[in-house]
Length: 210
Image 1 (cartoon, rainbow, N blue to C red):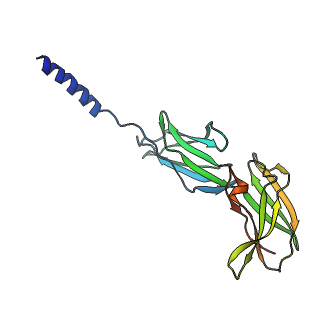
Image 2: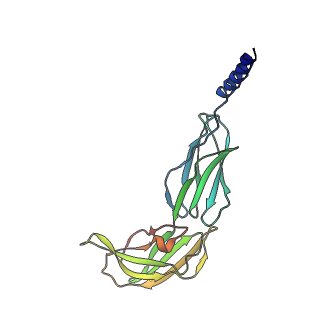
Image 3: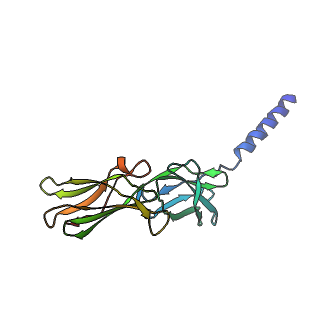
């Protein structure tokens, strides 16, 4: 009888464990791994309970920081799915949380916004916009060489003092310069990952004609 009693207790405990609800889980994915400063990216995922109207907190840990901050709050729909935009201003790791459940982290990298403007024939202005000043960083003025079918360097220029942009936390670093090129030559600006880092990645401007 004693042996039967112990077996019953153990069997009951095992039955209780077998009938326990599975742990709540979250997924998270980004519509693009890299964005240009000021551009949004969509984060989406699924809550395993598949319940609607559940608040999912999106936490961001930005480059240079170890403290996560709330970037957005998204609501689930009928199948537990959620989606919404965030606009990273600097490289960051994102994570979805619901009560004690956390999704795997998703890393997003950010390119500085590079702009090249032709002021007059042979005169240009280059601007780099980011959430931190890029003063002293070098950018490359390039032209497209048709015969080699690649971009080649014309000038290496240091960005000057930064000024606040139109929206926080934007900082705009710029440089004015002159360059003599054949009329109609395709030109652009570029910043390498070494110069943009550690919190930004390489970027290029839109092309224009000299």
